[in-house]
Amino acid sequence: MDIIELVKAAVFGVVEGITEWLPISSTGHMLLLNQFLTMNVSEDFWNMFLVVIQLGAILAVCVMFFHRLNPFSPKKSAGEKRDTWTLWAKTIVACLPAAIIGIPIDDWMEENLGSPFIIAAALIVYGVAFIVIETVRERRAERALEGGASAAKHFSAPSETLTRSELADADARVKSLEELDWKTAIGIGIFQVFSIVPGTSRSGSTIIGGLILGCKRTVVAEFTFFLAIPVMVGASGLRLVKYFLAGNVPTSMELAILGMGCLVAFVVSLAVIKFLMEFVRRHDFKPFGWYRIVLGVAVIAWFALH
Image 1 (cartoon, rainbow, N blue to C red):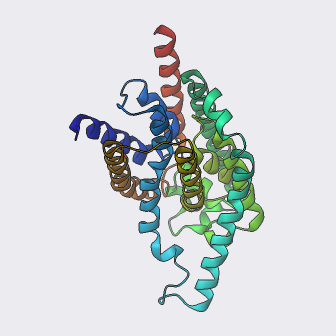
Image 2 (image 1 turned 120 degrees about the horizontal axis):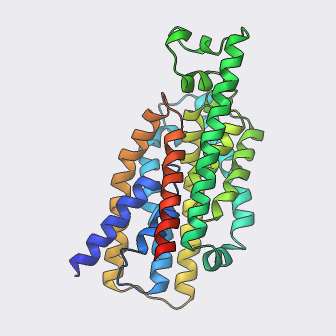
Image 3 (image 1 turned 180 degrees about the horizontal axis):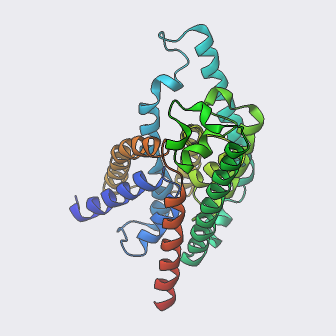
């Protein structure tokens, strides 16, 4: 058993666990990390590992939101069970656009859009988008407040004590998952299609879509977590099928590497999901936008010089 390779797998697990849920692109970070930290595995296994490690992250969502997502819970009333089934239906339907468009071009995207410069460009473009969208939301909420349509009425605190980001959330059209209508859910699913480009971020795409469509930050963050379940399970299953159909058989070391990566991604994801939900209750997504821009510029500079 090669301890060094397991340590590398753990590092990839940490990066996956952090970047899968924060809107900063997990695939982009994993591909960039691979430029500096390469595991001693076959190319086919690496391509499979890059996707299947997400199962560790998705398991964290299933654990943390088990009650919310469980339609069979004896603690739920008939109405609550019906709402849970409706939430699942909206989640599945919202995933269809990405599946219909993404699956046929999956191989082409992997071969042609994985360069550091494309990843960097996507990081920067989405970073600017986060800053612009949040700024527009805040200014719109301030104008509404000044015009007498007090967005702050949704908070118990006086409007004078609210931050600009809180005012923007108070002015949101969709303030809970129960208020998330089918049209908005499908719209968020359409935005998820853009995440097939490395560096854009699946969570980043859906969060931007949700903000544009009038969702409160906590609502779109939670719905993003739920969207990840069918998307990641489907993507991992597809990649595993391709891996084995190509005649690949993982070695015992490769299985250990995959297990380590998934385990670490699961543990780290538990902490990151909790952090993100607490963060977006009082803050906007601008810090992630600035991070994306700085990282994108750094990546361009590094690979241009090397």
